[in-house]
Amino acid sequence: PSDPYLLTAYDKKTLTLTADKPVTLTAEIDLTGEGRWATYQTFDVKPGAETTHTFPAEFQAYWIRFKASEDCTATARLVYE
Image: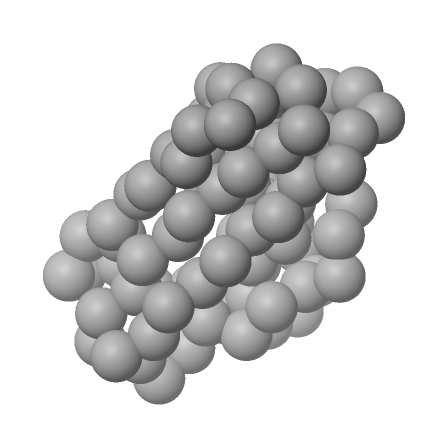
């Protein structure tokens, strides 16, 4: 998995994913901050395209991390407001 990224204390959160080849990226979240990871959602990412997800207003978690279905070069960009 990727390094975890802090999610708590932000109202609006948007995720943009890119990859160098077709891949499924799984977003895992830690709801309590205690290292208990659970699958949030999977995203099918195509090369040369951005996959964007806006988190619901009521969504809360302490951390997020990502896992790829296979070796690839991928980017997860989080925008917090």
